[in-house]
Image 1 (tube, rainbow, N blue to C red):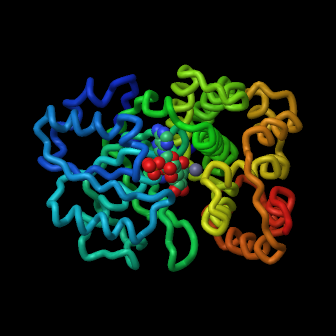
Image 2: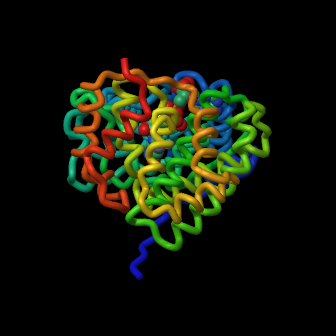
Length: 366
Ligand code: NAP
Ligand code: ZN
């Protein structure tokens, strides 16, 4: 047995937590750099809460609210320049995975001001400013992972920053997700489930991550009827936030696997949201596993009887149709075949043809 489990994030979850636990912001520095998206954090109350908590602590702050979905290296560079000018001491990411991932990359770039968008992704080990994460989606679990997924327009793909930037503190309030539209709710929920499953069906899975995964799948399964009906009760919003957090804790240990790697071209080239891009591949992905023991356990924990029922569930949830040409499928398969990290996480031998068939059977031909 050889297990390493590393989870250095202080996680606190409660309704109203940011205001109630305002003193948690103490000790990070005199000036915060708040990194957020264009509008949702102003609507769901998270930004206002963070500002109020910082005011209570007498901490100055500057807000950068221009993070786009799937944040680009260009945005990271723009924000970092501002952060340096503003002389900020620490970073607070408020929003979905995009602003929080951006916050992590900005924390690295500000600490290493010699870097720019073209050389930020480097094998060299880099330090970062402290990051606090306030997630407002229940999907990525980025508040408890070291990853920062960035869009690299030069290479026309999404890439992991490759540094270990675990937030120091994650404050979770499901209230922020209560008014989220159904598409974002479902897409992010699929992302959360995919992290749990890809960490469960993973070469690096161990007894600790499996324990988290089995509980996480069960909790997610309790929300599936709400996700299908579109009537998402607040109890389900809470459960989805917990499932998302569990998913993050798992992939922080195991990494994600094939569907994540395979989804990046669908998001980059076809503009499909992260969760739906992954979800569109899941029926075929679970079909190719030779060892059915853990796959059947997933269905059981979800409250499903068979792969067919899983297919029916995904058909109800993934409401996107992705049109591709044969050449595109070949190009995407080549790209994933080069992604040695994702292939290595898949616990069984896999053929190029199997990846090709996952795409072929999941997507629609033009
Ligand atoms: P997102 O890209 O952060 O946000 C998607 C949309 O949801 C945006 O329009 C955003 O609006 C909106 N939104 C956010 N919170 C909302 C709320 N509470 N109510 C209503 N709308 C809300 O979505 P995400 O799925 O959370 O993050 C996806 C990104 O995370 C991808 O880049 C993915 O690759 C990455 N990811 C990272 C990890 C990791 O471990 N680091 C893991 C998985 C995925 P605004 O733009 O106005 O804020
Ligand atoms: Zn994901």
